[in-house]
Length: 177
Image 1 (spheres, rainbow, N blue to C red):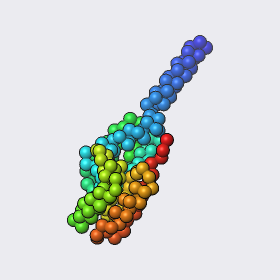
Image 2: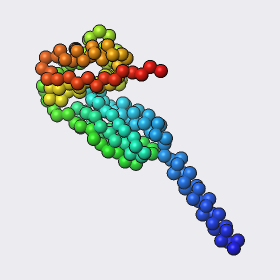
Image 3: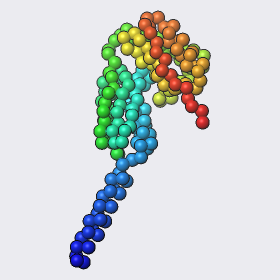
Image 4: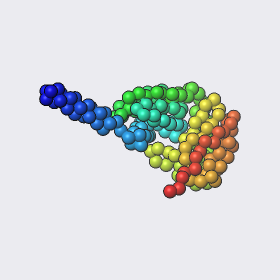
């Protein structure tokens, strides 16, 4: 009887240890999100003409957005897969088609947007807060600006670039607080 009770006690202790180890190894969602963000914004080829976004659901990270180079798509998946607590990565990142026409629109849109008013500050730093995505002559503005006026200025500047078929303004206003 005593032997049976000892075995049950040992099994109970082992069960608690295994469960606590599983909980300890799984990073909290907020921490995982911060790690994913850090890995993405420090990619070597990630820049103003790329847009990377992600969603964390449990131990699965879904990547989406648009990039100019296939290596950026590959590196994003590889880096996120190495994060502790991430068991699965779904890579829905679109690689934009190669196009000299789109490249010229990118350059002209960059100059037009970041030379408008005080918008130059959104292009500064290693990770600009405004991204310009161009696909088949269509421009999409992604990222975060300080106020509605800056969002409107960026939209008007991009809309005035010759050769642009349409502009979608997905710029978000930074929350204060």
